[in-house]
Image (cartoon, rainbow, N blue to C red):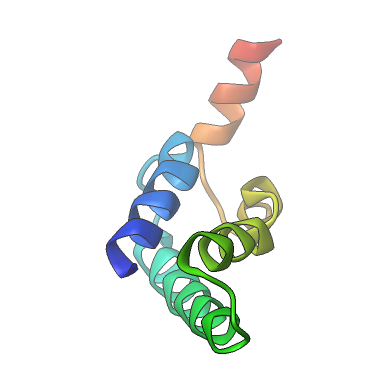
Length: 81
């Protein structure tokens, strides 16, 4: 499950490139998500239910990114305009 959650985080943060705190942010989130997943499994959820509830609990990555300096988001938003 760790690899599946790592892939989810890699995809969620892909648009932000390699910002300075990326490794730390992703590592902390991965730990939190694994803990959440295990808690849900203990509550009786099956693998798929626990995974979906875990990734849903992350919320909007852009809100997390507001806390960290990064250049890629500005460029991405400009290209959408």
